[in-house]
Amino acid sequence: MSTWLVALVLLPIALLLIGGIVLLLARPLVTPALAALERARFQRCLARAARGDAHLHERQTEPALREFEAAFCLVIVRADARLAEQIQRHHTGLLSRLLSMADDLPPQRVRLLALAKVDRLLDRRGDMQRAYLQLRNRPLRDARRLQLERELRRNTRDTRGAVRELIADLQLITSRKVAYQ
Image 1 (cartoon, one colour):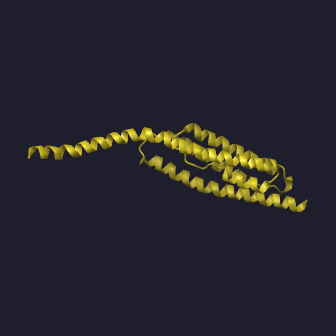
Image 2 (cartoon, rainbow, N blue to C red; image 1 turned 90 degrees about the horizontal axis):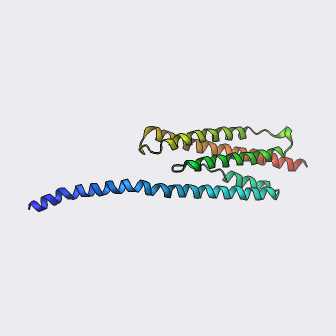
Image 3 (tube, one colour; image 1 turned 180 degrees about the horizontal axis):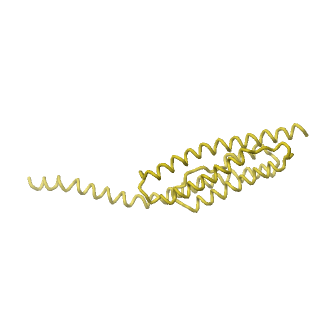
């Protein structure tokens, strides 16, 4: 009888210890997998930008604009700070391509307020992403971390809308250019 009582007391303690060890080991094992997923998503965005460049070299502006719109990588980077910097440089390159497309148009009709809006939103996103990565060692339920994650999601939504607006402006301007030639 006493053996059963000892077994009933020790079993929950053993299960808690095993669960704790699994949790301690899971975080270091999950981080590389998460980083790999983030890198894969970024690689897909790089491929979209390359397809957009190919369309642009072939003077196909509509497909190029669609590819450039899809090439914006608006993921919340949780594991790799270097990836966040690469994404920010990638966005700068995309904005540069879009600006060069606008420069090829007659100057009196180019009004790209959306470009400035996207640039401002991406700059703010970079600041928030750096702050988020500094907090990655804090608990998952940390108030500041949760707040930054909400702000990053809101920024993603706003940036997607601003990018759509920018692409629509460029499509409108390029269609007018073709109509006036």
